[in-house]
Amino acid sequence: MKVEVIKFDNSGRGIGYLNDKIIFIPKTVPGDIVDVEIVLEKKNYLEGRLVEVITPSKLRQKPICPYFNECGGCDLMHISLSESLEYKLNKVNDILKRNKIDYEVTKIIKSECPYNYRDKVTFKIVDGKIGFFQTDTHKLVEINYCYLCKDAINNVIKDIHTLNIKNGEVIIRCNYNDELLLSLNTQDKIDNIETLINEHKIVGIVNNDKCIYGEDYFIDKINDYLFKVSYNSFFQVNPYICSELFKLIEKYTDKSNNVLDLYCGVGTLSIVASMNAKNVLGVEINSNAIIDANLNKTLNKRNNVDFICEDTKNILNKITSDFDTIILDPPRSGVVQKVLNKIMEVNPDKIIYVSCDPNTLARDLKLLEEKYIISNFKLLDMFPETEHNESIVVLEKK
Image (cartoon, rainbow, N blue to C red; front, side, top):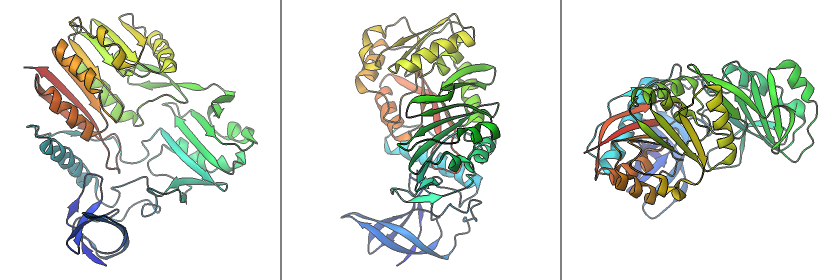
């Protein structure tokens, strides 16, 4: 069925109309005229699969990756980097507008390079083959190179088969020194780890949460900070953009600030903020992350930061007016509403909100705008070639 693509939606899919219904078509570009197959029909919309590009858009470019049309990893490799950055700005501003937030974002911080930036990737293994699943399926796209991964990760992909894993997954992490940490999840017997150890800079291999070689962590370095990164801990996947985020955190804190860092993880933003702030308290529900956070405090010789292990929504009595600055870096689901309500009750001078989801960010900003105004809002292109981005917003009380 023939469709003209009119624009992108907020998930990076092309949008057109077919039989008076809106249709969403992945891997298409505004201006494309395409042949599509309907894969889902609902009352108010359709979802389609691209069969053929009949007439390509002037915006369309040939993806550098041969797996792009099948793989579910990238969304925007069929347009230029400048077009993808404009799309991300427009997307966030559209979400703000729909939530009736009167602010226009004008700045997006570009990644150092749109390729070979990721230092953590999860690969699926099916019938001994390694790759990624197609979007919304369990159909494997076998690969031997990912254009988003750092070179050290790509170099080890070709040797994963030596482990003789038939089915499972492997998570590969890489640090600033190209050292690799592998986390395996499989019921198969692991063989021949010596091949990987001899050919690559492997510092640790974990299988089903049990360390079978080396250590279950490595040390990573961002700017002048050192961080212990465990095999299962959260850490930003783009080192260059992470370094830019850290610079902004430093910029937005000063020596008079008493900072409360909620959802602090392994303490990265707490430690960065402590370089300028008077005192910092980090809160995190994951006990292993808190262990790492305290080690990171020691690694970076910070005496003005402390950490507690607790669910953020259970420490509301600790959110007091003693804190004039609050850092929020929640999961994709955003901040629990009763935590936001408590923050507004305390009414700190400043809130620094770091988010990877513009929809939940806008929802939370709408609630906070009762007492706060946005003084700064920057996008960071943490995930080039995909529809995702990171945001950092500074709010100051009215």
